[in-house]
Structure formats: C-alpha cells, structure tokens
Figure 1: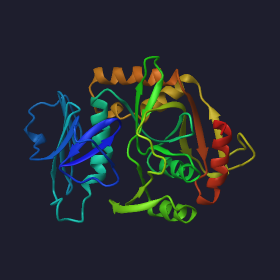
Figure 2: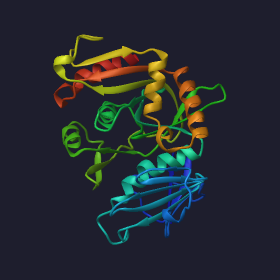
Figure 3: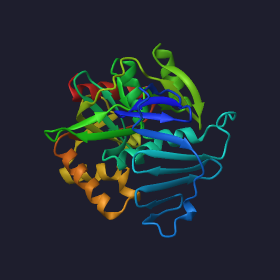
Figure 4: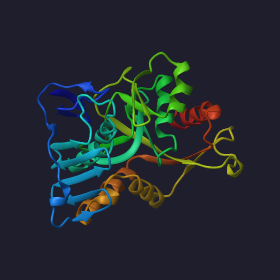
Amino acid sequence: MFNYKAFGLEISSEIELPGMMEGSGKPEVKIIQSDVDPFQVSKAEVEGDNYLVNGDDVYLWWDEIGKVKISNGELVTVESDKDLESSDELNIIPFLLGPVMALLLHQRGFLVLHGSAVNTGTEAVAFLGHRGNGKSTTAIHLYVEGYPLVADDILAIKFDDEGLPVVYPGYPHVRLSDEAYHHVKDHTDILTPIRTLAGKVFCDASHQFSPEPVKLEKIYVIEKILKNNLERGKGTENNVRISVLKSQENLLDLIRHSVANRIFKETTQKENLFQCAQLVNNVNVRRLEIFHSFDTIQDMLLIIKRDVGV
C-alpha cells in the first residue's frame, strides 16, 4: 500500500499516484483494486452517460480506461482496463486525482469547486473557470513568482467555527498543457516534470507547499474574451479586465463551477446552494476577463497582484 495525504485526509492506495505528499499510514480513505459493476444497480437515484448515484455510492466509468465506485467518502474501488503494474498507459490516474477525488470530498461535506489557488502569505486567492480558461496557468505563474500553490483543479472548502471559508491544500503538483509547461519552465528552477499522463505534464510544485488549511479571501472567475471585444479595464493594461459582480451573479458563477451541481440528488444540491451562498457572503468574488496569450501573462499577473494588494 502507498500512503498519502491530501485535503487534510490520510489516504492509503493500492495504486501508486504521482506527485502526492507522503502520509502517516493511518488512512481515513482507501483506494483499492477490485471488480466494479455499475450496471448491477437496478434503480439509480441519478443517472447520466457515464455515472450513476445510488445511495452513498457513486459509479463512474470511461471507455477503454476503467470503472470506479466511490463509497460514503471513505472507499474508492477501481477496476482499470489496463494492468496498472506493467502498463505505461495509466490514463485512469488523472481521473482518480480529479473527478473521483472531487466527488469523494463532496461526500465528506466539502464544498468542491473546479479551481486552483495560491497562498499570498496570509490567505488564499482562487481562480475558477471552465476547462482551458487558464486556472492552472495563472496559478503556476504566480507560484513561479513566489506564491505557494494551495490547490490545482480541485478547490476543497470548509467553513471554520466563525463561518469563514478555508481551503484545504490538495496535491503539491500541477497539471499543465505541454504548451503551458514549455512556456513557464525556462523562467524557474522550482518546477520539475514528474511524468506525462493523458496529455498533461504533471509537474512538482512542492516549493513552500504547506498541508495546513488557508483562509480564502478572494475568488476570480476567469473568462476568455476576444481581444477586439476587450475594453480598457482596471489598471493600464488592455489585455485584462477585472469587474465586481452582483451577489446573485457571484452565486450563479459558484454554483456553475461546483462539483455537486450536476450529478447529485435534490437534497444534496440544496446543501450545495447553501454552501455557495455562505461563500459569497464571506469572500470577494470578481470576474477576470482575459485575452489569453502567453505574451500578455505578465500584464495579467500585475493586474491581479494590484487587485489583491500584494
């Protein structure tokens, strides 16, 4: 068994997972290999093209990759289509570290958003957005400038005794497109590729990484726009615009980027709505409109740092 720690949880796994922090060996979550048959469920509460929910169990499956069962936030059962001990095609691992872990965290009561976050020194700043909008790219460029990574792709949030949101650090690695990796690698000696899986470069981002929860202060929802539609925004650069949204717009943005929005039953979605509303009431949410180009990233970072106040 391999022992890891992520999101404040001790995890034991029969499958070796790259770029993880070592754990204590006293697991709260187990990942095992065994048969998984989602089609034995006679009547699912919620069902989609590649998932179904039945009580405390969530089933996911992907053609030519494998099937997974997530049980009660404690057990992940994996049936891979590949021999994980001998195959180089370990395409199921990004799914285990991505959607599978996100759903398990939701089962454990976290508010889970699709996003990345960095630590500004006293608090976390997060970036949400649809796939390809630059969440990881923005976070890793701030990391290169000295802001430790807190989370990549999975933003796991709980609320403290005062009702304030804190982010639980995920993995001390980041997944980048080949283009993003090659753009950033020449500017740092603290970003080391671990391996390439499913078309993404897994890079070590453990420099100054801390496993302790960090208070969440600000969220940016990233939207890509055409340069000829971009008007002059906050600051002097024409490639970035930050806007303050109304509370209801913020709430809709958070719900749209939450893991629970799509596949869980009505009662769980109500809890998710409550958590999103609590988050909106306790953090600043801004829309970050960007013209996505590696040539203009420094302009974007400057605008963000000005807005954050660092």
